[in-house]
Image (cartoon, rainbow, N blue to C red; front, side):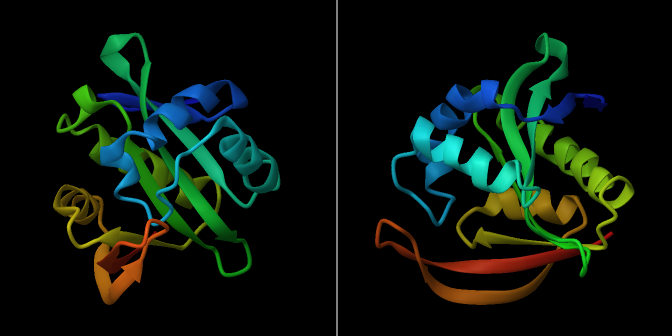
Length: 171
């Protein structure tokens, strides 16, 4: 299943995407924007699929570059899905360095949030982003997220501490 956009298409992630996800999550640029910064392994991702994706706790898409034979370039996902409250945490990353700055994240955010509203019945999305990730903050605001709180000195798995912004979007 593809959801079609102008620049990107998104499709549900499968176990066949494991090697790509592992490669992307181990990209230093990507890893430094996560709280969990340990080396990402096939086993880590396979466990994520078994305990989160297959249980419905996570819905994860692969972002595909439309004009390049649907080349996978990143991922967008909803985690901690609460079907009763109709909320979830939103996350996105562009894993391919040459796909940065092309508007792919902006369009994938719109496609994914429309899916969350129209197909999943969600009413509100939240996200967490480090204050140092200015490009992501700009992209999230472009996608309709607004800042709700700043959490000071969040400790990452590597011991680094950084301020984090909480954002939300009503769907």
